[in-house]
Amino acid sequence: MTLQDILTPDCTFCAISGTSKKRVLDKICTIAASKIPDHTPYELVESLTQREKLGSTGIGNGIAIPHGRLTNTESVVAVVVTTEEPVNFDAIDNKPVDIFVALFVPEESCQNHLTTLQSIAKLFSNKDTAKKVRKCQSNEELFELINQYH
Image (cartoon, rainbow, N blue to C red; front, side, top):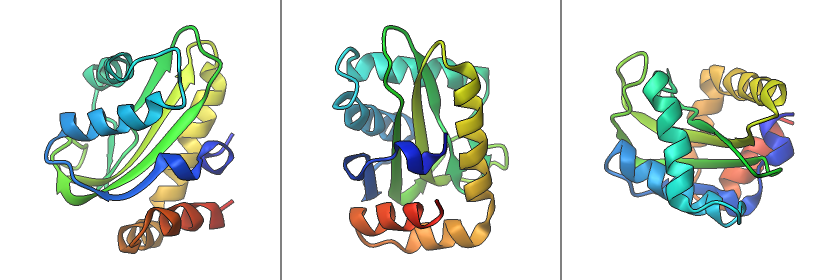
């Protein structure tokens, strides 16, 4: 499964305001909660923070792929947001992050989860892709850009 298979326009946001890792994760989880009715935004934040405790999901070059596993759901949800200003995210290269690709998956779908994470990392390993994402001026433009890579 690729990002393009699961990303929807209502989970794609360009240039949100967020001044800290916590605030960005809170906004991502509020967006995702509308797609995952069995879980509150708080529970979604908990799933992401549990994973972050194992090590930052900031993969470098201003990109983070926060992800969490959820019980009692069949939903796989992706949320893509860019921030107005980069935020400190404890990324592996110690650089701030302004592109976030969050993933929420059922606890049982571990292999699909890994495949999706690999496809996201591969998509954003191209620095031109990240540059184009940063230039997007609207949610629609960001969604269309990501879908061009299908």
